[in-house]
Length: 451
Image (tube, rainbow, N blue to C red; front, side):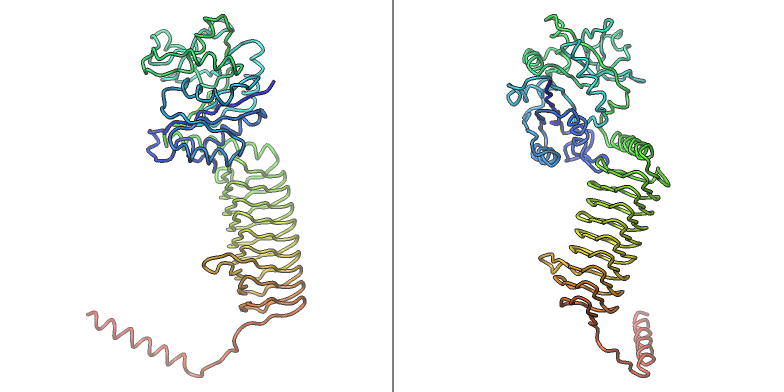
């Protein structure tokens, strides 16, 4: 049976004290919204509708960056969760199968939990995700009789007896799409907040003789983010989960507590990650790779057998083929290094392609930016780039060619040629001492004038 997702992302999140919509605050180098979308997308949904409100243009851009097929609907006035779900009705009017309501600020709901909710639909018309809370606080309470959910009571409307219940509502709901919207259309505002509560559909369903049930999950899955403190706690929880998964999948972490992952980080087995390594978004590391200490990686792909670092920075568009070596204090951007390339240290390569088994000497820079446009550098296979070479792009260095150390290469170098581009050295006898004496005298006179 097909599934549609409705992701609620309309709130501003005033407790975040931010101009940024709450669901766009980053967790694991990705907006909170992306975490909810990732969990839901694992169900292979036929449609995904994101309900936006505050900062709708920004929310739409972030949602479409994750999946261009996502549909956006606007909740102009935030009149409650039931009202938010109702905004998606026109887009899903003809949708068959089930609908699941997720929240853009609840990042840790697991795929397995959502599958359990779909399975529970075989027994109940409406399924709610609940959890046993260590401290129920102001959560809505789930009132159950045996296997049946009778109603959900919001804290403000609950009696003392109902507030003593520890089984709480996460907000995540699953129902047949047509049933969900039919129930939502009957919601009223007779509650302490004067809002359309999505949770009230349980009582409406029971009045119609429809069954409602609860799927329980660990409380940690239901963690919502409403404050900066909660965002920090969520980051800690996210990193702990990612580190545990990496270790379980055969990745060596020299110091797990100082390794930071992004939501979409992929690392193959038998890779080794040193201390203080940060993975930004869109990083894939194949098996058997060594990333040494204090590296920062983003938007790059590293192939089997490569070594990176320490103190290396790989920026978006970087592609390292097998057995490439990138050493300390090397920065690479939008560049492909073919098999066996060595870039030992103190180098910047941007907008370049380097052929297999080429050696890049220390201090090499591809001068790729003229102040307006970027230009490419092409270096052929088995070339040798001498230390402190400046390659003024656009420029090509042919296969098996060499550049002399200290050269400024402004013209292409033919295959097998040696390029030398530096002025002839001139020694001026005795001038060093004379200049030192002059500079010392000038400094003394300046200090005297200050007194």
